[in-house]
Length: 308
Image (spheres, rainbow, N blue to C red):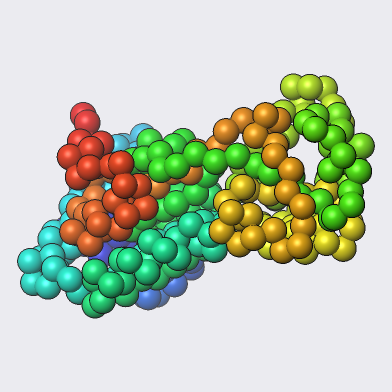
């Protein structure tokens, strides 16, 4: 039994049993992957994968249990490597942070700036994607930390911490009729074409839920992942924008007028996630505490424990 065999099993499950893709991930050949799988199955005396001819189609019942053990073994191997790196050079390494555009653009710059001053020899790799991909990257070890508003708390093998709360705001061009109202309503917004975030991004679920609960139909004519893009199209008079409040607090309104919408949509919580049971280097703790100052190392360590 060797680590290459274990990695072949894990990546085969992750890649949907596509051995060509597994071979690309592991920088080897498809026959090489097949051989590693077959040799481990022969050594263990059980079939890990179900087969249709030569094609792998799923995990057997024993295979599901074996995969959980393999995941733990490979996680501990990664932890061992991180621990050795910690003692060999505590302030040298790479911190991979997976996040959304909104967090990377508006909330992370000051954190990264302070972190770089404290750990000048640590390289930061910012990876931007959807909340779903962010979770997958942290689970797979491709990212050390994931930061997003939606989705991170739904994965059992991730430990996520609430970092800060925020609301949506409405943005309109100067002179827009909504500016004449003392307190806007959902019905007021629904009279206009709307521009906001893509599904699954930056609290979009709370926006949809508010209109649904009020039984109000909306006309969302354009969606985007980027708050700056939304504001640009509002400036072109294509609709009324609904954006994250921090996009306005940290970037100004870009000539748009801002209307409070905290009474219309539910509060959002941005969370930071790490893989449960992973070994965190000292600079990772520091980064987490820069982003979420209320968290102590004891809080993080307690949450990180793998409970049987």
